[in-house]
Length: 119
Length: 164
Image (cartoon, chains in turn purple, red):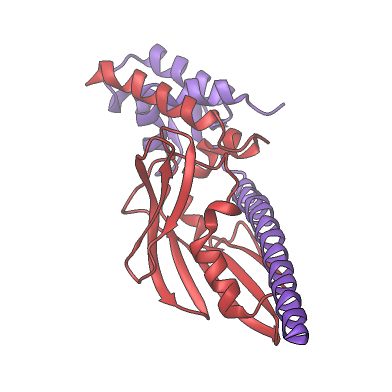
């Protein structure tokens, strides 16, 4: 099940978790290394990572005895689909407006030509 | 296109309209308010108007019903009636970021005396980089930016303040 918007927003609403994401954006890091780099205890780091994991922002993998955390990276599918859908809607709206404009133009031309005939 | 190759990520759309291309260009650039999905707004107040300043280097912004302006990006190229390139500079945090640029290239070609085709390419979406994942739930939300963004901004500012 995809993470809820609330879970993502809650996850991102914390400064330490945002810092963790920044560190992870450079590559996978073990929880111990993260704890060394941050002014919080290791259990606190683990707790933050759990929140990030529940929000599907990070994934963990096991390398030997270490747990590595990395940014969950499903590729750019979502971003592309989002913008594709967005521009589809927007350009559909644009086409409807253009049709209406063209229709107005035709009507105006029709009015003008009728006037011309009369005159 | 391979999404995992690390190469440019872009979307492409085109639409044919029953207007000469100069009219189509004008309609697209001067009356965006009339076809822009209203809920796609990042301003503090409800979207009243979308403005593209008609020159290279001009601003692309929304004006709210309360008159406040919220910038979206800039005009990178202004070449009527053939082409306009808009820089979409809304970052992963849904704020205008002058350092962040994705390009929306819009070209108009003739398809007949009274018909033209608009081609739109939104390029360099890979620049969302790892932040893509942070926006995932928002992107997957059918309501788009509605509420979610306002909520995100409120939440982010509320939670960021005590740390300062």
